[in-house]
Length: 64
Image 1 (cartoon, rainbow, N blue to C red):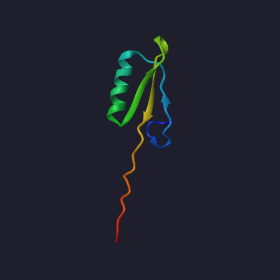
Image 2: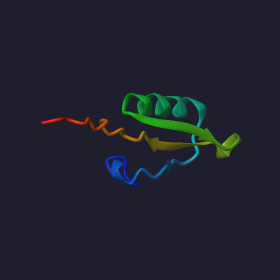
Image 3: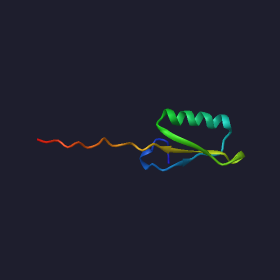
């Protein structure tokens, strides 16, 4: 999945990175409407990015 292909809604696992780099990714994800989670331990710790589901506006009943 590419970052610009948000229509698949599939999580994207990034490669392992250090804590400082993960913090930057978490911040950027939040600023761009994505959720992020760090998984793994030690040198294998990595981020999983998820696109937040868009909510559809509620349909309203109109009487004509």
